[in-house]
Image (cartoon, rainbow, N blue to C red; front, side):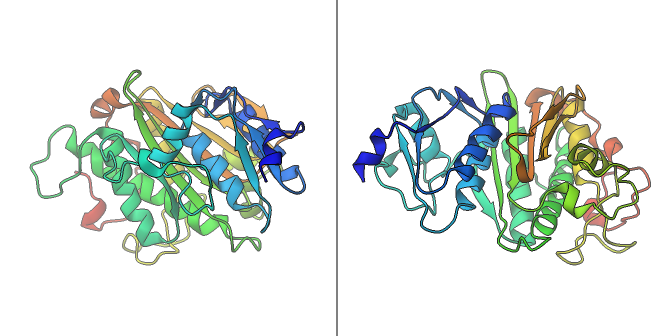
Length: 327
């Protein structure tokens, strides 16, 4: 087995496995999936990995056929410790990893360790955890509302919608085994919050193929259509979260608006397309498509208190349940 570590046909990690260079990230994941048999990864050049890198790589490993082994060589200690601390290896059959680096107590006001989302109830709990990591404080519905606290519940609402949508759409088109992975971290040196929500399902184009708003059957047009509010709405005027299959179709739209209002953006990849929501930059992933949907959120934490987040929600929102009223 150790002979694999000295293989000459190893796949090399890029320097950064992150939303800062999505093309390099998806190229690596495509190379892993395309390589038949066991795979050797050389991490000697890897110096940075963020939530998108964590979630996308984990979703890639999850989708590999049974019996296919992945070996990683020459990983720097700080990267190895970070992967352990963020629970990257949880659920994998791993050798050569010192679990002492794992922080069993977590850092709830700084990060959400990598986690696989299985159902709607879990998604709602994770949304609450994401709000804590994003803002650095918990939401207390019984406390007196302050200028900052008033933004927490709308953020949680948008994230619940986004996670619920990922769960329901990823498993369509015969992808019953598709999974959704989530991670978040606040980087103190730049005061930047990064969140990743990644699935290895069927992608936007497959789920929106019959939608009247889809004018061009391309992955890029499907991403653009998915950003239109209400496109993924699958319920009428009923109370919020009545069933796990229902959502208002505003999660992706509102999350993008929150990011941009807080000096950030989304990176959205699906199929052979990748979009930067703030700059409207479009990237082609022709040689390294992503089968599902990968979303990277980024914003400045200190800008969130100054954003009127309720105003970013669709103004014709017909839901009147007190759980999601923000006045």
